[in-house]
Length: 165
Image 1 (cartoon, rainbow, N blue to C red):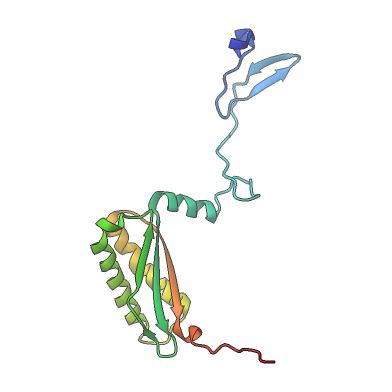
Image 2 (image 1 turned 90 degrees about the vertical axis):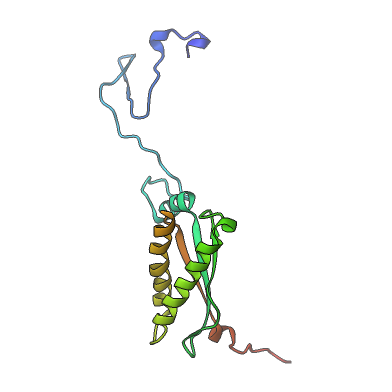
């Protein structure tokens, strides 16, 4: 720049989207601007398109995440214990114990209703999200990513086979 001795008429201070035209050995700032948005890089993808990963990262940074862990026995269609909620970046846990206990009870009641009949893991996960997301928004005006984790006692109780020689 100018500090290094370049004449001021040969220095261009440009903003994103400004175009410098080089014609016949002369540089000038163009009247037209080009679109120059931020590009987010996810792994090797530099397309600049908003992928679901970028969307999730934005939600995580703005609203945090809530994980709901519930243990069920799919053989008998029963909830084995009340859901447990873990949050990161959403609310300060020590100040929000009442909110989290209400949320756990809400999810428990919603799952109890859903598990009266035959259901799938996908339906249970949707029930968790469908009951919890509106509740959390109503109470906090934030939309954390809700990650349901369903532990199936039936799957955990399958006998392991061991080889003997």
